Length: 96
View 1 (cartoon, one colour):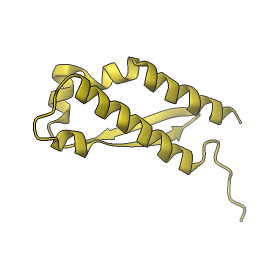
View 2 (view 1 turned 180 degrees about the horizontal axis):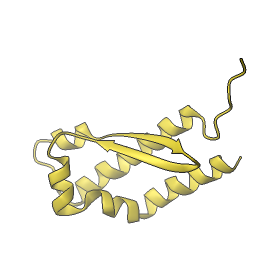
View 3 (view 1 turned 90 degrees about the horizontal axis):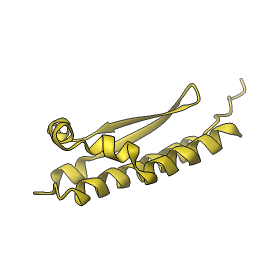
């Protein structure tokens, strides 16, 4: 049985995930939300290709949702230039 060729290779999806993790960590630093560093180190992202769209799952320690709720970390990341660059790179690879 022949393997299907992925539009965006898994390797590139992992690279996009690492880039987005760094962007989120930088936003946490920018907002000076670091106390012990546990939140910063706990951030993990997984990028998948869902019907031609980039889907990003972000996980972190349990209080990430509360910190994000108060400081809109993920919203600011998604509106930022660096995240839009990752989206653009994803879409370019997805076209091929």
